[in-house]
Length: 141
Image (tube, rainbow, N blue to C red; front, side):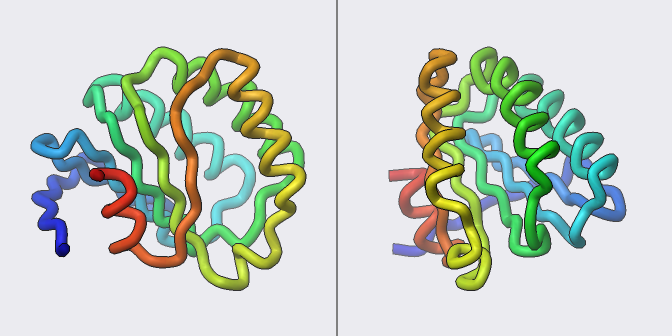
């Protein structure tokens, strides 16, 4: 089943492009190139504002351009983005990555991060995909 999105551009810089499909309550984020720490953090702060303002329920992040996240940035993401997730109306978050990205991922660390979010009372479901179609199907099912 193919899902037709009606995306409207809301923000773009050298690192990230953000589009919204209001009908589906979806925010689509595409990382255009690997960000340094500052660009990553600035990008996520901007995304936080957009997610809260748009009241999106579903977040599809094409993070194939992000090859890795420094531990400091992972920790920053949890501490800074957790309150945003809690305030947001996000139900599901899907991250698109490459096959190599999946293999390189520290799964234990990932579960530890999800555990921290759960402990903070965040109920947003998080999943990873290598296919945009599979991610959309999971998000909107």
